[in-house]
Each structure stands twice: as structure tokens, then as C-alpha cells.
Amino acid sequence: MATPAEIDLDEQGRLKAPNGVPVPVNRVADHLACTIPLPSWATDIHVWVHGWQTPSAQATKVAVELLGRARELYAANPDRYPGLRTGYQPWCVVVRWPSSSRSKLKRGYERIRDRAHAMSADGKGHAPYVIGHLLGYLDGERSDPQAPAVLAGKSGQYLHLMGHSFGGRFLCEAVQRAAEPPPTLAWSTPHDPRRPFTVDSMLIFQMAAPRNAFTTHFETLFPTDDHPGAPLRGPIALTHSRWDRATGYWHLRAEKATGIGHSGASSAPVEPFSTELLPIDAIYPQLALDNRLVNVNADWLYRGTRLNPVGAHSDYRHPESSHLLLTLAERSR
Image (cartoon, rainbow, N blue to C red; front, side, top):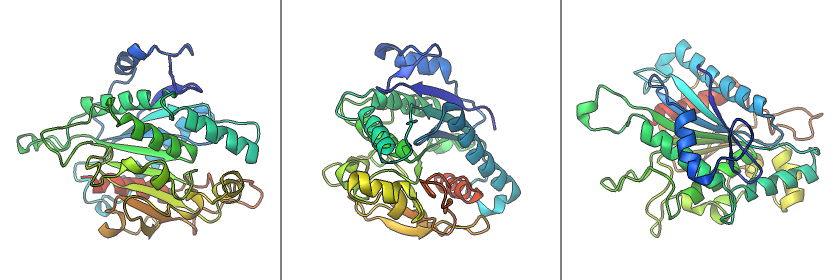
């Protein structure tokens, strides 16, 4: 897989230039256009936002690992992914942010939770503005997978969002606020109300957020009678494991309830659907993933170690995780 593109944010969510200086707001779009050329060969564009205690170099390494394994799985058994008839050539944009804290316990958890929130929330953080321009730019520049039949020979490029831990929380908050008026996303297609936005899938590993976060924090990610449009076309898939102590024990102490990464999402404007993380030789039934919000139970695989204070919180780097993200890409066709 080609080297991912990387963008870096500071503690206020501002886009940083290579010299570390924040890019002026009126230059964000131009900066992204100059520094992130979309490869024409890519079939799928993935945006990865890392989680707690992840150095910048490690964030890129994990993205390369997940997508590299996905590509290997497809190459070894293309018949398991019949939707990918024209192949699977992933490319990634890694969004890196200051996620490290000295403490790996309650104090560190709370500090990074508050930082992730401040980068996106209350109209002050810049992250939604930057993410909105990034996704709008990617959507505007990629070839359209829903193009008219006259362009049937060109399959188009699909856009997927991926995150881990606080990265998923930060991504949901940023995407939701970026989609609010005045719009910063370029996804709107007034001529086709069935397709108001074109993010094709979203996968969050071990999300660090309350189980009811999609009711209390991210409710406008889903279409309702009051908000028929939504910033995501495909499903949001959320892995969880009861062995995740960061979103179990530590989340319980910090937020008075266990988190999504431990027990899954409990409520949302749409009914959550529950399924199991499958081994790489098993094919996901269409019903299992064809839902707006999918809890994916990974108890059997994401287990971590007893010596690790966060348990299974970061134990998602398995081929089975790549199998899930590859299946989501396939079903977006």
C-alpha cells in the first residue's frame, strides 16, 4: 500500500503546517488541496483517527497495518468479497492529534477525554472545520461511485471513516458539527435527496464514550423525521469487549457508567443491531451489517492481558479487524 497522507492537529484542533505553525483558517482548504493529492488508482479512501496514548508515528503504522492486512485478505481469497469485483486498492489519510498523557489511569483518561471534546465541541474547537474541509475535499475530488450509467466503466472511489477509542469520539463529534449549518462539507447533492452525504461506512474500535452517546452527543448522525438528512450513508460499526478495562473500569470511575468499547452502544435515534466479530474465513451475513448502528461483540478475540491497566482496549490489531473493515468496504458497493 502506498504511503498514507498525514495531517496533524494541535490541542485546539487547528491544522498544523509541517513547521508546526497553525494554518490560517482561510488557508485550510488550499493547504489540504496542495498536500493531499488523491491517487487515481485507489478504489477506497480511508480516513483514520487514532486513540489515546498514540504517538504520531504509531498512528500511521497502525493504519498501514490494518489496511495492509485487508489487502492481503482480499488477495488471498477474493471470492469471499464478491462485491470487490474490480479489486481493492486502499489509500489512507491519517489524522494525528495530541492524544498522550503521562498517566494511563483515571487522571490521564479524563485529561484526554476533555481535550478530545474541546477540540471539537461548543463552537470553539477547530477540528470540525478541518475534518469537514478534509472530507469535503476528498469527496469532491474522488471519482463518484454513484455516477450515471454512462460512466459505468469507472467504478468510482469509496470513502470510509475509521477510529479508535477517543479518536472515534472525536471523529463523531467533528463530523456531526461539520455537517451543521453553515455547512463546511461538500457532500450535499440537492438533486438526489436519497444521497445527501457520501461517507460510505464508519468503523470505530473500542470507542471511549458513554453507551448512550448516540442519544446524548451524536444524535444528528442519523436520519430522523426532524432531520431527514444524515452525514453518513452507510453503517456505523462499533466493536466492544468486556475485557476492555479502559472503557469498563476506568470509564465507570470517570463517567459513572461503562463505555461503548466495553459493552456497546445502548441507545440511539435508530435501533442498535448486535452481531459478533467473525473469523477471517467466515462471511458476514448481509443482515448483520446492513444497519445504521451495529454493535460488534469481540469478547472472544479482544482480550488484552491482566498486566495491562487498560486490558483489551488496544487489542484490536488482528486480521479479523481487517476482515471487518474490508467487508464494510465491499458492502458499500
